[in-house]
Length: 367
Image 1 (cartoon, rainbow, N blue to C red):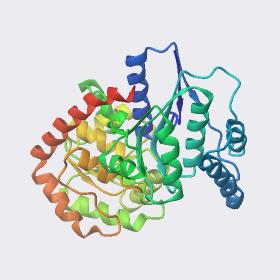
Image 2: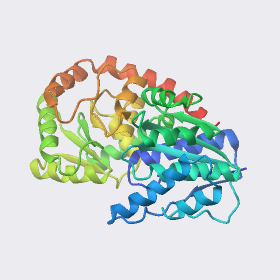
Image 3: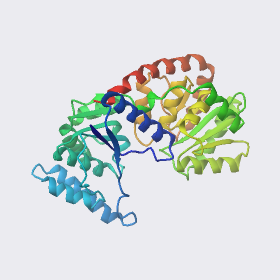
């Protein structure tokens, strides 16, 4: 059996990408034991500096998908204009679209993902779309086209309940809820904890901080306000977790403001990040996968919003009592940090128990 993964993000510096693709591959291997498991390499989207031409190419794929009379050849032609050329190699038995955070209205990759999934389905492969949050306007053109494509696929799952309700509204009634593949990570070992603690010279107690997809490298003032709040309320050293471009830029701003801040970058792998989070009193921020790491390790979190509803969905999935905070309204920040620190044990236990249940469900990604 041959399995191909569309949107293999494991080469991304982001810890979450590495963790989730590892978990997805492991689930697929455990269920199917494929003779070949490879990835479909996607070239960068064209016309990076000429958005009008890129938008025309994206719209052409959208019109093709929306047309019930389109031919497979026409779809392939339009996808070539988005730098996807169907190879002459063997068709996989199963194509797995790893959606992650790319299935939303601001994603430049959305239509290409949908187009490639539909193309392989029309060519005769079994196609699934998994491991994703879906955040689209219910009545939008994108939602209509996603509904057309997803209803034609063999299996569709989303990683949190808000996306599941949205798909039901769009008319994808066979979609199911399967937690993100990163839930399948095994807990950090004592050797991993000792090693990273030594390399980073971690203090006995500390708190961790991340950025979010909802802020940019120009959000320094907002981020510094959060940092000062966290530092003042916790009274503990802060470790900035920075594996994304935005978070690395914010870390530089933070270090310029306070050189005592410890920064962990993508020079360390996701297992090391998991180990650092496991030893923290608290994780604060809006990064989806580090929040999953914290839940797996029983570290309380104060969540912040991302650029989609994924963080709200994750908190609902985990039955967590703190709602994600808006980056542009930090009024509740101090109260929630105090609450998480004071109820550290109960909140950590809640996350550990609920995330363990979610981990057991990840195998269902391989259907």
